[in-house]
Structures are given as structure tokens and as C-alpha cells.
Length: 515
Image (tube, rainbow, N blue to C red; front, side, top):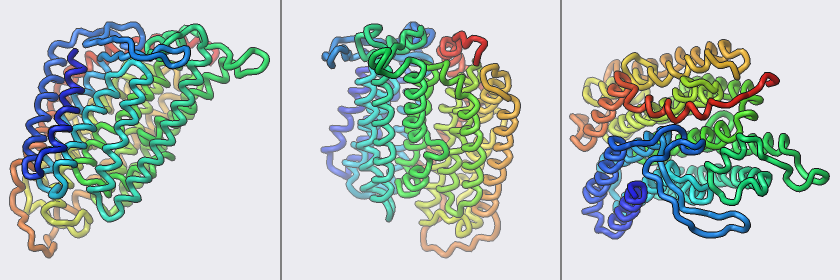
């Protein structure tokens, strides 16, 4: 019952904070976010799962209960964790607590509603990573949109309504496409499956039990159905990741969202897309993934290079970090399509690493903005001399993004590159790997250039704001994230061992010799 307790704690905390007076909301939200964090850490210490939850592995903290009948399919309450989902649950609880702390300075209106929505968002995110029934999973998936839409639309910048509507329309349409594609697969499985269980669907699809959608004379054949469903689900999840060319909602959402919301958006919400790609496309339909490996890898490399070039052209420091996420998610996609232990495992590890690093950079930009009320790189010249601690943290986050050894970003990218290079599924794997590695050069270029122009040089900002040391509730989340990034860089087996155990089943598929 640990998963239920975790989700329930978040939703109860959200309700309590939502009705509390504004003056109590920030501290109340922080203290109420601590129990879910402690429960998730306790679950890590007591984790006894093995293998992949969708492919017959031992599921930790599993709960199964009959729920309702949906036509010929039983819909059940089924949750549980494996080595892929547990690290993402912990990432959600850690970043939520730190995001709440980072919101104490910038959020000064409707605080009860703001923190209540943040905690509701946390519960929904945990549900996405823990659900093992498709309908239950989809309920949590859609539930995430509501608080995120409101958090951007109410507490965002001048163009908040445009950004919130754009975010909602993009992701909601993508969800609809994915939903139709998945049910096309369920209908195609026919009598082979009698519930909306994700493990049952995954095992039936990998066993080749997909039949005609319709009849053999008037219907869609299994090969065509599988390919169409794969492409539709890929597009649906790619919008959430996002990767090129589905990325255009991301910069607007990030720029208009307040800092704590950007932290959760980049740190956890984007991982919903890559997590879903791993669970649905690359686990359930490996043969189709292998057939499309080259175009998917090309999209990944384009995202890496194009995202980095867009970041290079930005003058707003927050936009630089936002576009860098497009680039980083390309590494995750490349790792997934490699279908090797280090490729898929490294992609999952990179999700965690990017969540921590992007969260750190967004928080740091937020601290700069709180003090100077500008994010324009040219206007922030010399800020390091006035805010040395915050500037040092930003440099640490930037080096982690560049892949400095002994930091989490280095380990994630290293695993992905090894896995991609060794891939036997991906045609011309060394060429794709080399092209992706070139992205690191561009990343280093735009981050070093941004740091040089914003942190160093003559100080010329005309401001009445106190640029002294940031308050402790602003610095504590930053320093915590730096410690976590270094800890994962030094000891990646904190998560990688359990991730590798869960991803071995994903790559254990006989692709045959005709691909």
C-alpha cells in the first residue's frame, strides 16, 4: 500500500494547502511535501522488485483490485514499481519539495491555490509512473495537464494565457492521438487480452498475438496496424518530450511559467514523454522500433543539434535553458532506439540526470531574476561579482550539462554513447553516435558564451534591488541539487543497477535477421 499512501499523501496535502490561509501556505506546503519525499526514499531502501514490470518481472509495492468493466475489457486498479519507475517517482518527490522552497520568494499572490496545485501535480506525476493499467495510467496522464495549465495561465508572465493554451492544446491533441492508437492495438489483440492491463498488452504484443483490426477481408492487417499504432503513439509522446518538430510549445511555456513550475516542467513532465516512449513504443512494439530505428535516430540527432543551435541564438537566459532541454531529450531518444543495455539503461539514467540538472539551472535563473528582475544575458553582465554563490552554482550546473566527469550528466551521456555505438539494431550506429557527440561541442559553446556574457565582465545593471546573498530558502534547493548531481556522477549505481535490471527484459527480443 506504499504507492497508494504516497499518492494519497500528495492529494491530501494539496487539499489542505488549497483551503489554508495564504500566509501559512508556503511553509505548510513545504512541510506537507516532506512525508511523500520520506516515503519514496523508504521505498528505495526497501525496494525488492526485479526485472521489468511490463514483461513478467517482480513488481515492488504492487496493488491489484478490480475496478470496472469497459466493454469487453476489465479495467483494474493496478499499480506497482520497478527499476525504471521508482527513480522517476523519487525524482518527482525530490523536485517538488525543492520547487516549493524555490517558490517562497517569487510567488506572492494566491499562494494557497499555487501550492495546492503543485502538490496535486506531484500526486498525478507519481500516478503516471506507478500505474500499470492503461485507463488508470491515462487518468493520471491527463490529470497532470490541469494543474500545469492553471499554474502557467494564472501565475505566469505577460503572455501566460497564450503559453498555457498552447501547452494544453498541443499535449491534449497528442494524448488523443496516442489514446486512439493504443486502443487500436487492444482491438487488434482480440480475445488474446481481456483487460486494459499494460503488462498483459506488452506480453501479448511481443508474443506476436496481434491480429486483424476488423476481419481478414475487410480490416487492417497486424503488420500495418502495429506500424500505424507505433507511429501514432510516437508522435503523441514526442509532443510531450518534446523533440523536433513538436517542440514549439516548450519555450513559450518555460518563459511564461514561474520558476518553480519550470523546474517541474523540465525536471519531471518532459520525462513523462520519454517514460511513455520506453513503456509503450520500445517495450510493446520492439520490431516496429527496430524497423524505424534510422529515422528515429535521425530525429534524435536533429533534436540534439537543432536544439543546441537554438539555445546558442537566445538572449534570454531562461530560453537558453529551455532549448537545451530539447537537445538533451534527443540523447534519451537515441539511447532508447539503440536497444542495448547501456543505450536503454543510459537513456533512463539520463532522464534522472537531466531532471536534476535542468531543475538546478532553472532555479538559478529564477534566483538571478528575483534579484535583478531581468533574464536578458546582456543586461546581467558581471552578476557573479555581486552574487558569487548563486553564480558558482550556475557554473556547476552548466558544467554538469556539458558532461563534466564525476557529475550525473557525464554518466548519462556516456552510457547513451556506449549503448548507441554498440547497437546492432540501429543502422550506421557509429555515424549517428558521432553526430550526437558533436552536440556536446555546441552545448559547451552556448553555455560558456552565456556564462561569459551574463556572469562575468563589467557590472552595468542599474537597479535598486539588493543583489546580496540570496536567502537560505533560495540557496538550499540549489545546493541540494548540486550534491545530488555529484553523488549520481560519482556513484551512478545508486540508480543504474536497478535500471539495468529492469531494462534487460526490454532488449531481450529476437529481432530476426530480416530487419
